[in-house]
Image (tube, rainbow, N blue to C red):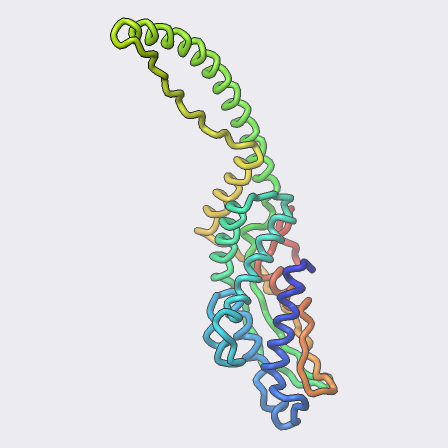
Length: 267
């Protein structure tokens, strides 16, 4: 689990304790009546669909703390995507990637079933239809990398040739301007050099093209053929608090937006 995810886990654990218990010892009547599935539904809506209304109403959270659910989920998705394909975006490219992940998550498909009360607390089934659009892209990315390297090589060779020719021309022009200046005004004009465009490295160009492809794929998201069922195990502590292992939420995250170098992993 990344440091970012660990921080989110601690924050969410605190929120869940507040939302579920409301006091040190939770009376059995309140425990039996609490709509745990509604909380999970509100949490997922906040995290994926960027819809925080139910989450704020359920635990009286601030708007900023509710929005943090989506921010953290999007950031983790971007990091997981980069780790899957060994990508190294700069800060600007990373922001662009997070925007792509955020838009994809708005289409997340999941269904939260009613909680089942068990001796240890509750169990809740969450059924997810994975988004597989960004899975199995290794072949396409390899081709993009080769094209980016070839383009940078060609551009570098062309600029080198133009630079040599331009330098010779500047010397000749400079002599002509000098003579003309001496005859008319006696002053030597200073030619303004043309700005040299900054060339992108192969890595920068490669990452830009990867993001271009991902943005194109947003227009027609693909979903996995089979739904995945994840069972959440929510424990009731001796202090009357309900606790959820955030690794289970991480499992939902990775299922909702699936990344795999060689394509979707079938059940």
